Every structure is written in structure tokens, then in C-alpha cells.
Image (cartoon, rainbow, N blue to C red):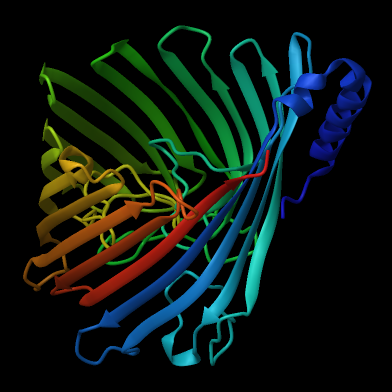
Length: 422
């Protein structure tokens, strides 16, 4: 639930008053509104294959509901509106010896048990002037500096303020401040911290969490084929980060294209950690009809691994189902193949498979280099007609092995459906 500060209560009161005053002449506020109910049935099984694992298996099944409402704006030079989101997760199957998939909220005390249900409600006030929008409240940004995670039953949400501007053709600007995160298996807004699992080797000072994440930057579309971006993100007292990106796509004729995606991030400490990382990644994709062939390379350097908000996603090219290959000094590559069965007369069916390998991880003094590999397969189908039209089915399989992390075999099966309410 979004808890308002006194100043924010005052601002929202002003918004509400504005809506009340403008209501007679602001039919667009309601006429332009949308409401969608997203449902997601999620089964996940994760087998731990390493010796002496404290838990042999994590296996749970749950049903998720996501109700999303977006209003239009009142008329006038400054339009006022509001959004709302309701999230609910319901347990279908779990047990204390199988918790920990991340799709259900579990008790904090031992023995941990998945709760029968959990959820949250989020509200966002918004102002629009010309082609700029200011949002205050529950946010779900997908930007290089900060990305919500939506890989389980319910998505991660943030609390804060976010200004987006598109006043110049081709230029998209963002500026914002976040103070809380609500994790995917939680119903509580919490302070943020940096992800420090695996072999990130990040050392924090006295402050383990922060209540301020500042971000800003922009993306410019130079031509229909070329775009570049720069973003800054800083978790107060923990780390500062600069990210640049170049995407270039070359049409090669009918049904063919070649795409280059180059990313670089420079991360340093902000007085309360030892964060020091340079991350470089490059993806190259060739499409031929329904076929997609991708190769990628990623390199970490510096005294730590890549830094980002714990629980969120990040901008690394090798962020995949289980790993992101962002450990200290890690070098990694991937090969990927995609196929769209619409090209052979089966619309709605798609296949993705990839293999990634990482090495040169700093495991500490006197230890050999760390190595990891991961294999993913993703098969998806969206029903095209009949009473089940638009129902989505997805099977995700992953296997990973490492000499410093967990050895895992994992399966996820997801059934999804979106119902427009108006």
C-alpha cells in the first residue's frame, strides 16, 4: 500500500479538488480510462542438485490477479488523472519443505510456511502538460537504471515520483526519485539495498539500506534504425551508476535484418560501500524469416561485480532465467536461437533456446577461477481463436551448474489471460 507523507497528502488533496472542479467539463477523465484484469496461474519447481544443499527442492503453485486502472486526464493546459493497481496472490499448493520459489509470500519465522494469500493496492496521481507527465505514487519503471521485476506471480513495484518528457521529437527524457520497493513475494514497502548474492563481493558500511534512489537520463532516436541512450542511477550512500546504450538495426531485404545492441555501465561507491565495476556487453542478432540467431559477449572488470537494486531487474545482456553473469571479473558469452512458427502457418507458437557460459570469476585468494553455465528453453503459445482466444501458455526450463553457486534444474509453467473490463 502506498503510504503518503504529509506533503504528498496535501498535493493529492489538491489533485482531488482539481478533479472535482473540472469534473463537469472533463469527460475525457472517464471516457479515456481503461481497466484490465490480468490473471496468471504459475507453477514453479526448482531442484537443488549440489551436495549438502539445505533444501532439496522448492516447489509451489499459485494463482495471481492483477487489476490495473488508468484514467484519462481532465481538460485544460494541465491535465489531472490517477491510476490504481490491485495485486493478489493465492496459494494453490506449497509446504514448509518446498517454500522459496518467490511466487508466494512466506512467514519470516521458522518453520517457514507460504501464506494462503497476499497482495497490495497501489495508487498513482498524475499530471500532464503538453507531452510531459509527472507521476507520484506506485511506479513500475522499465529503464536502464531501474527495472521492475515481473518474472514470478506478481510484479515488483516502487514508490516515488517520475517525470517523463517527450517535448522534442525523437527524444524521451526521464527524471525521478524512489524511496521504497515492494518485492514480488511481499506486501510491504521496504527500503532498498544493493544485490549482493553469488560472487558480487560488495561490502557495505554501517548503512545496509537506503530510502533514496535517484535516476535520470534519456533516449534519442536518431533515425528509424539508430538509437542511443544515457541514464544515471544512484542508491544514496551505496552506489552511483552511469549507463550508455547504442542500438542499431540494419534491414537486409525482405524478411531479413541485423541488429546490434551495445551496453556499458560504470558503477562506483557512494560513500557506504566498495562498489567498483565496469560492465560491457554486446548483442548481435540476425533475423531471417521466422528464425532469429543471437550471439552475445559480456565482460565485468573492477573490484566488485555489477550493482543494482536487490529484487529488481538490470540492464545486463546476459540476465536470463536464473543468472545474470555479473560477478566480479566475470567474462561470459551466449548463443541463442528463436523461431516464430507463424512463418510455417502456426501463428501464436514460438520457441527460444539459448546457452550461456561464464568464467574468470574472482572467488577469493587462493581459489581457482569461478565458472558457471546455464541452458534455457522457452516454449509459448497464445490461443488464436475460439472460447479460449488470447489465453497464453508458457513452459520455461533452465539448468545451471557452477563451482561457486547453486546447481539447479528448474521448470516454470504459466497460464495467463488478460480481460479488458472497459
